[in-house]
Image (tube, rainbow, N blue to C red; front, side, top):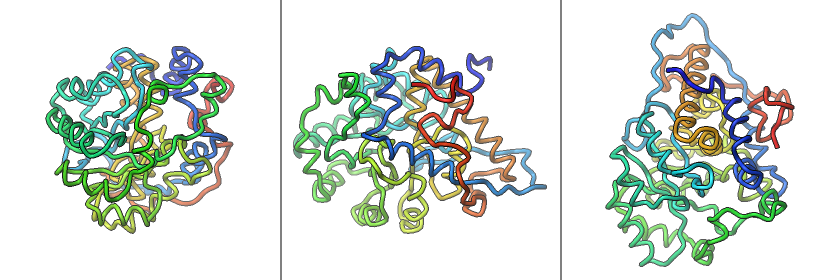
Length: 358
């Protein structure tokens, strides 16, 4: 296909050109010193590959399943709030792109249009992400609506009990709609395992817990019926000075021991990043920030173009590693290494003008 963008560098540059200052800071930034966000990249940059040669890689299979649903790649579209400020149509673009690409889209509960409109937009499998902002009756109503509108799994975000301090946005005097118009913060602060258990009963289907960063919490989640553990520090946008997501992934994978699927996000920008996560035991990787950049650059077509670039990068990395399927990847293909440069939100794209866009 004749794509407008040949590299994701070009997508980042176009996104910066299209996004206003406050919107760009919302997409690109993290919390406080942005240390957690940088550590996401640093943890990825601290892993080097160990390739094998003389393996038959003439037919490389990139497909997998996510909670039993087919996926053409080991990635999914992570939930991103306020996408309506990024591109006209908001999450509709993601849903349409996911159907075209054969991927799972996780619809954020804090973006537009409504879950009903997204749910009926396509019949392709999709998951619904929730921030708990009400009591049990509120939960019953929302989960009932999600079940009635084709959502196949529920993703519960659990790392937002307190809103973070995002200084990039404050310096602009701007807040995204999800924060400006937020209600029910007391319910986020009061979220507990007891409420999770009630949600398990109400939903009656696969549930993913998003925002896990320790073995202790992962094991608790398995005990409480989680179908998947979503390792995430909210892209470095919640607790500052947290560890990089991929750095905590191996211990969680080992502890969970196939009792639940394990996903991860946080700083994943290149196909090589995704291959590293799969080698460390992740079932799939959530694409969040890069998804938003692609939408800002070109809407649905920009997102499809971006994922196609990732597809090529994953295939190249696997071929050069000497593997032809995701199942062949394991930790023996990775080694600890010192990052070759300063890790930051744009360090995956060294050919940007000036090395970084602000």
